[in-house]
Every structure is written in C-alpha cells, then in structure tokens.
Amino acid sequence: MTGDGNTPAASENGSGTSRPENATDPQAGKLRNRLFRTLLVVAICLPLFGALLAGAVFQYGKYRFEAAGPHGEARIVMLEPGLGVRAIAARLDKAGVISDPMIFLAGVRLNRAESGLKAGEYEIPAHASMAAILRILREGRSILHRLTIPEGLTSEQIMLLVEANPVLVGDMPAVPPEGSLLPETYSFTRGATRKEIVSQMRAAADALLAVLWEKRAENLPLDTPEEAIILASIIEKETGVASERPRVAAVFVNRLNKSMRLQSDPTIIYGLVGGKGALGRPIRRSELDRQTPYNTYLVDGLPPGPICNPGRASLEAVLNPPETDELYFVADGTGGHAFSKTLKEHQQRVREWRQIERQKAR
Image (cartoon, rainbow, N blue to C red; front, side):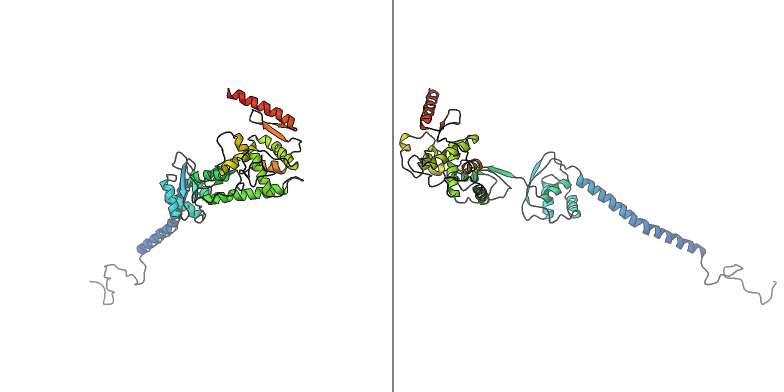
C-alpha cells in the first residue's frame, strides 16, 4: 500500500477524474440541436407544403370550373325567384349541366357573385363550363319568348292569341278598345303575365301614335289622333300589299277632302260581325244597303271607331300620304288594286274585275 492519509479517495465511477456538477453532456446537446433543426425545418416546410397543396387544390378547382360541362346538348333550366345559391347549384346539378356543385359554389363565392345570380329560364349551351354558366346567370340571359300580332286583327282576335300563348301566365284582362293595340312582335320571359303583355301593346300603340302625329302632313282631313287610327284601320283591311298602303291612304284622304263617302267594304263587314273580324263569305247586296254606324256606303266621313288594330305602315301612310288625284280603286285580280282618277275609268276597271271573277268561277 503506498500513499498516505492525504491521498484523495477514488471517484464513485472508478475514474481517476471527477466532473463538475454544472458541466453539459455533449451528447445531449447534439440531440437538442438536431431536434431544434428538425422542428425548424418542419416549421418552414409545413406552411410551404400547405401553400403548395392549397395552390394545387385551387388550380384543380379552377380547371374543373373552366372545363367543358358534362352535357352533350343544350338544356333548359328554370330558376325561380327566391332560390339561394345552394339551391341554384343543386338545380344545375340535377339538370346535369355542372359536374360538381361544391366547385360551382366555390366559383360563385370567389367571384363574389352570391347576390348577382338572376332568376329566369335559361338555355345552357352544350358543354358549357361552370364559368360560362355563371356568366349567363349573372347577366340574366333568360330565354326570350315571342308573340307576333299580325296587322289588321281586331282586339278580340288579339286577345285570343294572348290567351292561347302557353308561356304567358295569369288571368286575361278585359278586351281593350278597338285600335288601341300595336301589331308587332313582343318578346318576354317565362312568367310574364297576360295583363303585362297587353299593357305593353297599348303603351307601344300610344307611343307610336304620339310620334307619328307630331310629324303628320299639313291640311289632312283629320282632327285628332283617334281619327287617324280609324282611317289607318280601314286602310289596313283594304289591302294586304304593303306597297299599296300609301296609295290607298291617298285615295281615302282625297275622298274625305271632297266630302265623298269612303265606300269601304271592310267597314260593312265590321258593322255586321264586329270584333269577330271575318264574315266568312262575300258581302251580299242587301248588306251593302243595311244601315249600321260602320257602313261607309251610307254614312258620311269616318265611321265611329276603328275596325281593327292598324300597324305602323298604315299609320304612316295615313299621316303622310302621297299627293295624287286618284279617287277610286278596285281589285285587279293579282292580289293588288287598279287605281283610277275618274268614275268612268273606275267603272271600266270594275267591269274588268267582274270579267276576271266570271272566268275564275268557270
């Protein structure tokens, strides 16, 4: 045994050296550094990965939103007023024009179009994308239906067309006064009412007459716009040849200026059948002599009211007739009329017309 009593005792771990209590374990430090670096990488990469994932999802959704739709032919979709965005998406999905309602909803929200989708009846073109459908709904490009009112119909006849239209809704209004409706083609969307379309016809007639009356020729034998409608309605029924309307108008204006009776067959017919419009047979001789307020063979001047609803061309012809000396016209067998300045010329034209009628009857 060597040593003395001052020799320090051996350490508990048998080592000849001792570790201060506050010394750091190098191995533990390395582990902590590694963990820190790992967490830092995760902290940096996780948002980046999230952003990449979100970007990928957005690009996929955008691709689907702008891709061609699943429908191979145009389809009609009705969106009633009051439908919410989800209900609209469901309606479009049920119609088979969108491939994913959630993507459509997302597209609506990203475009801030929630309150901009309009109700209506829409024709969705074949393979229209969801983006295209959204534009259609935002612009309100509803299907336009049309109702054509021919010139020369009575108000009663026009009401029958309005009532028979399958797209218009609602009750029928009362039959408007004769001559108060403008014959034209009217456009409307599904859900429009019959009262609305009739009101539109009346407003159009009032507006047109106001404009044409202001531009009328001087020295016409017409004191009011209402008299212009009456004469225009007679012209409308006298000829179906558009190019003849001004000439026919000139004949009647000349006769009124000379205080000659108009002697118009259509006025006789209206006096017999009224708003029904058509007699369905030739006028009998006895009917030429039958006293009615509309028989212009017996009454002076204009009848008490229009005999139909005249169109723009007839109104223009009445208010700006050409200057002529013609006072008579009769059918010429071709669908038009032969015009004459004197009674003698007219009587010859009548004989020619009767000869044509006899030949047709053989």
